[in-house]
Length: 428
RNA sequence: GGGUCGGUGUCCGAGUGGUUAAAGGAGGCGGUCUGUAAAAUCGUCGGUGCAAGCCUACACAAGUUCAAAUCUUGUCCGGCCCA
Image (tube, rainbow, N blue to C red; front, side):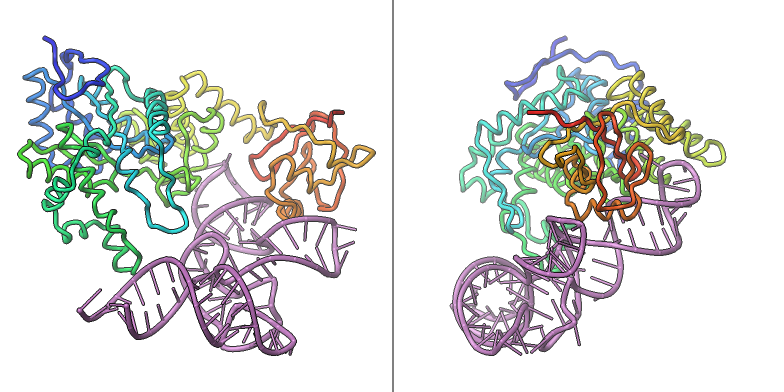
């Protein structure tokens, strides 16, 4: 039986549904893992049943900004859930919000978002496809841009759409309500965002919309608008926002508390080892496929030493993105460096520039740290040295005004885990 | 359009003429302790310089003053109230 997807031209394929080996209830259980909320759960079951009966895959929507993609573990939480749908035979529709971004000039301040040209958007779209392929199945992924339908809306149509929502409804949204009560500005256009996103769901006839917990309002708006316009409303599936390495804020690149899925295994491992113990259960649940029963054993301090559990966590995650071998060697390397206090095998190498050297080949250590990128300024370098945070070949530096004779192979260590190997200056 | 309040370092926030590179908090960074966890604890956080020092900073600009984050004027941006 072949399936025809009604509304798309960019569909990468239309595969017949494989007969899933799990029962619907097992599928529900799998999908439910880690979710923050499913609204309403009963509808999800109904949709899954219906799809199984008709052989027509569900359209699972995810909306994204057209900014340069940056896939970290937090983002991957949502993607991995989408992947589960694909593994059950359903189709994922990625909507790149190029049009919503064009409207956007968020919070007005000094950071005017540059308008993206259509070429840039197309380029970003491509990048997305490659990046998403690390988690998603490209065969079952459709990428669409919302300018396709939003750009065609006439003002009259927009007004009509806008009439489906009230200000009070929009102001329910927590961030709007907060900003309003704090006296922070809210641009009128920002109120249109939920509407625009909701219309995306209408345009593609979404069956399920995935999103982070912070998207609750927008996604529910989609559900409401579909109902309003006579479509069967989508099920809204919300994933919690993964807490970042700091243990407090959500993982994001701009906060610097993230683990990118393309990062070097060793780096990933180190970052994951630094998370707070209390984060482990969440990370296991959201970032790995370790069965929940086993997770409970791993995260019970009486049954498993937290350190071992965390190492396991690191290996599991790295295995997903780099393979089991890379995971094991990252673990081994970590042991060497942190347990046996050896120098890592690989580290950045810096060739010392001649113009910071004196005639007899000496370098002021503060200048060296700055040149090596280990300190942002010489003042900071000085501080690091004074506080005993810098060592050369294992010897702590004490004099911030000190000089050093460069020898190739010298290893500079700053703080606990920043290493650089020096290469002697070369004649130019 | 009118009235009114406000714009301080990464963020929050004190400071209403000099001793202010600017209190306090958050956060960051480094040391000790550890499991590169948490908690605790000590130190540190504009730039440059080996240093003395110099430079740049309290929205922007001009001014008053021996001296301005602090006073005046203008500009820009924002909140609230009224229309």
